[in-house]
Amino acid sequence: MAAAASAPFLGSGIARAAQAVGEPMNLLPPGYIDIVDEPGRVAIPGEEQLAKHLQRTPVFLRTTYPVGSVIVDTSDRYLYLTTGPQKAFRYGVGVGKDGFQWDGLLKVSRKAEWPSWRPPADMLRRAPDLPEEVPPGPLNPLGARALYLYDKGKDSLYRIHGTNLAASIGGNVTSGCFRLTNRDVMELYPLVLIGAKVIVK
Image (cartoon, rainbow, N blue to C red; front, top):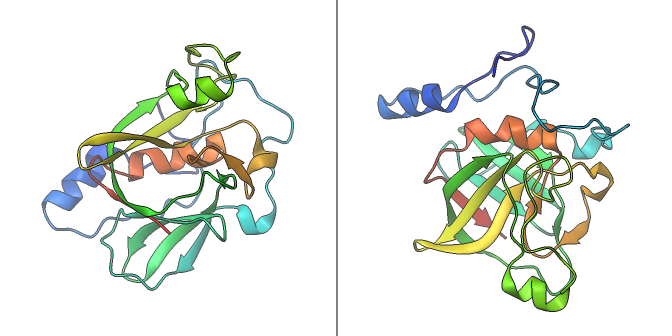
């Protein structure tokens, strides 16, 4: 889809090409992309109104991970996307509840726009009233975008995904996935390439 005129949009093809020729990737779009014409999206009053410290913020980040890596700090409930030497975007996220927190190094192996959602078997055992599948749309718990995290080629069942429930951002609210607002995950989506490292600590 087209970006708003005031918010240039960096597509994944451009990012991949820049990476291939060794050019620095410019991951600093000045504003958010326009998502008002996304199919299936139903506006919810105040859905993107986050506390200031949870809003997307360019920050200094001391790290040796390459540009395009994702770092999740579960204790502070922030997700970082590295954008250059010692630079990153910081996003507020919802993280795992007590008993559902974890750490490790995974990779993004699949991405989906407006994904469907199938509750994992363990979740269905805990909540047998859940449907076996939820179709794409505003009521889907994965929201507008999902990044699928794999460990050594195997699906970890963990995702970085969107939500309409902005009030849950910054909390311990998930079964181990990482939740952003739909607006933030839609901005993040083209900037994180297949194969990107995801460091959870």
